[in-house]
Amino acid sequence: MIVESAPAKINLALHVRARRADGYHELETLFAFVTDGDTVTLAPGPLSLTITGPFGAGLSGEGDNLVLRAARAFAERFGTSVSGAFTLDKHLPVASGIGGGSADAAAALRALARANEVAVDDPRLFEIAAVLGSDVPACLLGRTALGSGRGEHLEPLDGPSGMPVLLVNPGVAVSTAAVFRGWDGIDRGPMPDGDVLSLARAGRNDLEAPARAVAPEIGSVLDSLNGGNHVLARMSGSGATCFALYATVADRAAAATAIMAAKPDWWCLETALA
Ligand code: C5P
Image (cartoon, rainbow, N blue to C red; front, side, top):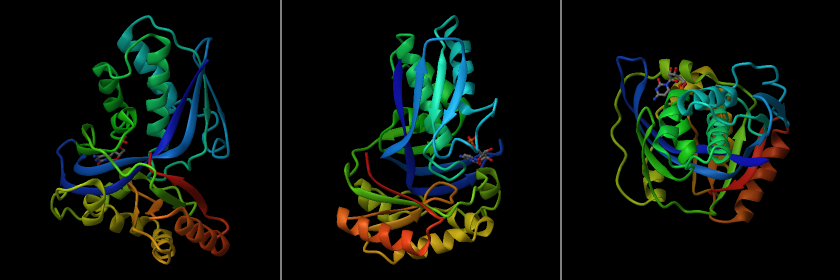
């Protein structure tokens, strides 16, 4: 049995530069990962998917889950190959801007690579990943990186590993396509130079305004995070999950306690940068 973690992704910054003729958008984004997320397990047997975990119910019976799409794409690309019975233990909220489905697909590709003795840095895996979704290559790489193009061109960076992070989601699923459609078409400029933290601080998330138009609760989440003693608070991806970075675990714990007391229905995860 092979166990692969599927950690949540956050976009420390996300600059939308242009709308492309193919319907996608040209991005510059600073990807980072946290130490918590979903888990994908692969056991011997015919291809199947069982979904468990606190956010599993929203996905059960979904024949088109990204894990199964990843497995089919892997089998097609590598020919006769070992597949198996997947279990997806779903701890990340669905459609929430932290790349849950993309992380699951990347974990499935890594599990299949291990089962078939394919190197996890095999370029063919990255080709499959880019077809599965814009964030899947970053999740396959699984480390802090600057992403460009749709997000598939990746330049690894050394990030502030271990830095305390709080993730907060107001329980509203947001369609990535709808948020991109709401972008106003104004290029607000490139990602600056510098180390990861100064880059993140100087950067923006250009999807925040269109995401707030779709899910106004995002404004309340950012207000709550901005009430704490944080280094940086921002929306991730196309929302609605927002994150804050903290200098200390005590600052993170104080923020989490205050938010959970005020908004018991919100999802909060106390974690750290990977
Ligand atoms: O690639 P993925 O399937 O994750 O993208 C979901 C949707 O988000 C796309 O259909 C597209 O509408 C939008 N998108 C975009 N530009 C990107 C990434 C995603 O317009 N770079």
